[in-house]
Length: 472
Image (cartoon, rainbow, N blue to C red):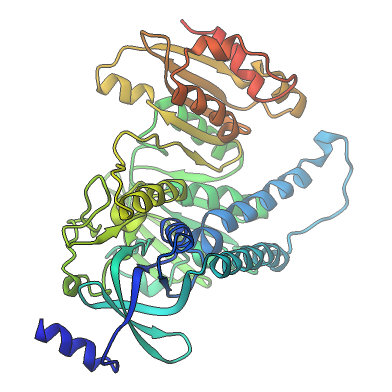
């Protein structure tokens, strides 16, 4: 204990500032917890290094979807003759694309700052690290140093793009999603390292802006954990849009500098291929932000993958310490981090809410979208769960016909009791359609409730009628 006091004193403050609740990181779980509990009277402080509100409104979900939507508008221009619209020469102004995104982000940050003010939670901008249990030293962005102690502590530090130990990768200064969203030019030839969510979304967007794009994927197919029909649909989409995809490919060495000239030495089936491009996007996974924040001094343990060890209540073994979001090993989605907030807030107030058994919907924002909730066919077979299949091509949905966006399909798995086990959509507005099915799953409704419903005509959700009429 004396050693811990000495560490606090050596930081320049003889007595830490006291808070009922201290949160490191202002992502979805952290900010929502702070606003909610501050309104309930808890003296609350949130320490944030750079991004007010976390990654989602600044450098991830929302800005990327802003840019992706702009890319879809660009694709409409490219195919304008299909709509009976003649066009003269047009070009992409990436500075304007970036500025449109920046304007949205600035507005979101203002909303967050207003919510902090209204809630009474204090936002401390600076780099924080633990120097003792429940004690954080903050090197503030204005050059000062503060030491904060919380009766209760939440860690919500998020994750970052993984840069592995491939020789030459770090030296090449590759783009991550952060830098890709700040591009003021169209890359001549973008090499995308990894065919996950970030890789596939950016590959299509940059291709639509005019880049030549090559995706290098280590697995045998895109979306390798999904059903074969999903992977086949994604491969066909990329082929039609002129995106090259190399599967079963492992990058062994990187040469050059992204933004100038870069070479990838790729092992593919035992033979070496050299790919040359102008830019490199690293999108091969995420790394939790748990290093260099003094967790060992706080008595907080991490897993072999770097996540903070928590139980189903998101509690740490250290007393009165919780963690939520990516850094706690929750599925890497903002909506899951938002649900973590409900677990955190209730348990901090003495409740008993858990993460087990919750639904994990997700959506890949390619065009068309890929969305899923519940079981895939692959998962059902692996678990030995019997199911009946409902599946239709999107051409059977009349709204898709009117939009002339009939690429893709929808399918659902039905259990013995007629309840919906899972839904997969690879189609326009797949994520929005999924919401209706999710509500039915939450309510435990039989699939016939959707089959026999009266949906507005013509809408995409109306497609659930032919979908569930096809149950085998």
